[in-house]
Image (cartoon, rainbow, N blue to C red; front, side, top):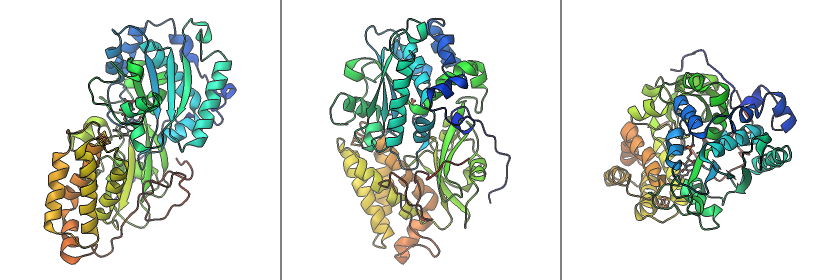
Length: 455
Ligand SMILES: Cc1cc2nc3c(=O)[nH]c(=O)nc-3n(C[C@H](O)[C@H](O)[C@H](O)COP(=O)(O)O)c2cc1C
Ligand code: SF4
């Protein structure tokens, strides 16, 4: 049962909700934009600025939740050219926060990129934007041009003597392009195939040089560490992973869209903010995008942050929340997700290439009423064996919905095997991952980009 709770809303990342038009430079200046560059560049020593980030406890918003300061410190002792990359590839079903951030608040992104470049001594930065996000590309490109013309991008930024050029790069157009080493390969003009790690990009990244790859939302949180003060930032939300967070809500929810709240807000509160579940009760959710585990009603009051979710065997990921109502066939939902991972595997590693193929087939057999107990055994075995054996985290992510569907909904798998069809009242769902414009929205479609932003 979804009960009402008082929602807490902040607009530090989705600032355009309070100040419309801030994608334009004069308006961004009007609301205090770029002031952090005056405060930091050439005035706060780089090492001290990284310490500010450490005190703020800012962790990456692109999936893994790595502490930003820890990553940047690794680059400190390596001399020579360094790079910064803002990762806006955002191709996972259900994740659409960076799209709104890039379209509506691109100058805060540029401000964050320049601060990051200053911290790691990079004179060149890239903003990498998903191929299908044409509006975001146009807004980011325009914002960079305007910032360059105003002396905010380039040499001697705002008279500080600091240099950083920024270039927008349009992604190669596949989910794997968002994996940081595949992204680097694609900027280098190669196929987006992940590199083995180590070495990590902070040691050997773009053209073999130290490179800080950060998610768009992470970059946009960096100016907030200055405006809120590091201690003030650390006081927002969860203790070990604080700060504001944009959650993308989709699926069986009344008002799909992006919602900005403090880290640690519960799923119950977010569902209420998004208008509840029309025509049904809550059954399950993916809390971290497609590459995460299904959680059930028992998790509705778990704080949504990296540590709390990992503590209960779930994943925070990108903070993309897909809601599934009581009428959802969970075998079908898992199959739909695995179709995505099978199609998006780059094929380099055998466990991923073969594993996603076979897991999808077994799920399809069960969903179509042709499955046996052997198929569920195989699914359990393979989803337990694959994690940790591959070159990137795509395969681990693919195993999470499978393993968690088996854990929480084995009765539904058994029903399909015994009766040859879905339990009464349930229907399959489809993830519209090839529908990038979000032009359709049916009750049976989850993970869609929103047609409009809600809050
Ligand atoms: C298959 C795959 C796709 C990914 N896609 C994205 C993406 O679109 N955006 C993103 O920020 N991180 C993505 N990541 C994570 C990046 O590799 C990297 O960890 C992240 O950009 C680091 O930024 P952060 O520390 O600020 O989160 C992806 C990872 C994998 C394995
Ligand atoms: S895990 Fe999958 S997507 Fe990642 S490198 Fe290996 S084959 Fe490619």
